[in-house]
Length: 137
Image (tube, rainbow, N blue to C red):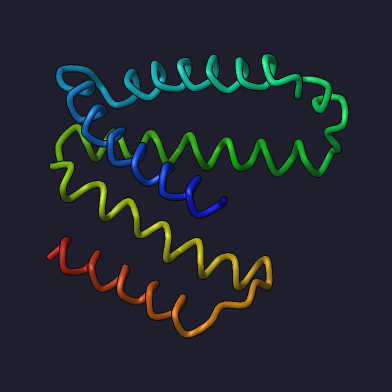
């Protein structure tokens, strides 16, 4: 099932890039990020409340909170820089370079989470890096 969720994530990320490029026209990336964040906040909490998962908030431990806050900070910075890139760059250049995060995430997961990767994953990461370099130059 995770593969379907990942494919839907990729689809909506692609749609997001195109919609964001149009939405950022004439405004700063910071304003665009703030508006997008409010929308996501409402949707995320709506899902939690209406799915009956709100009770899990009481189960959050200190470690959960620390790492989720740090993840939120990283997400916010990612969005800010993404919208800054979209302000002046073309979607067909910005979006693929942004996806270099896939190769970086693979490297970080190996170093910090001790996840094991095989030759296919390493090859895929190297192809992503090569593709990013082609797009940059």
